[in-house]
Image (cartoon, rainbow, N blue to C red; front, side, top):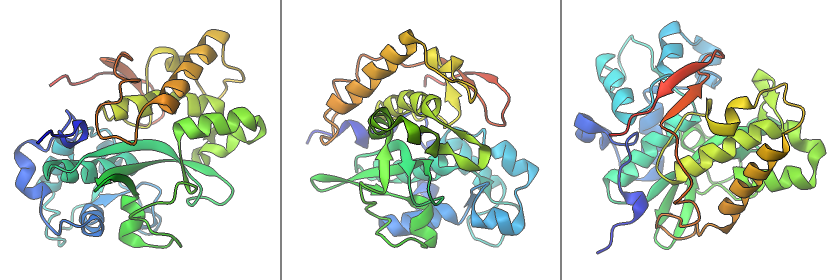
Length: 286
């Protein structure tokens, strides 16, 4: 039987020596979400508002792979739920990547989707990453964070398309309604606008090719984007329009590698902003 492109582990979803740990707990999506949330903490989540977010958790935001995350989980003895050590700090990308890894380890196609959710901050489309997994003949979108804690009025195991816009959809939305561009981003950090959506186009294409980067990673033309960008250059706009068109025309309903994206060059080196200051990062290639 043919194995789907998205059923294979990637460099960053590969659990390495922690395969057995990765598969602990129930196999259902909600069980996966609860398992991930038992040792992960978002810097802007409810736990952080209650307990704070410690310096070591800030440092955790630099962890890129499932193997690295689970290594810290083991070091802090977080698996039994009785450790005095802080949970691993991570953002939506990290929660979702752990779920993607669990699905892939069971041979189920799964991938990250980069986009914007309307249910995090009223009146805003907040930067958000979900785990998209193949259930029979269709893709479902799992919000790992909210599936564990609840608090929303819809099924977080199958997030409605109108509540989460992929970045390609967001690009065309603000193209039609430029006055709403600033609603797309991270409102708590004062980040948002066309420039933010443009950078996310690259991260979405990378994720769909199984290179799961961080929300603050930039390369190529996106390195010149910033919160003070008032207008994209014509060269940049043409490139981002091409990216959005490729995403729109890619066959993302199938489970194979999208041909429309396959020849877009992926980065080997990026500029990352994990704590607001630029850091040069050479990406792993194996």
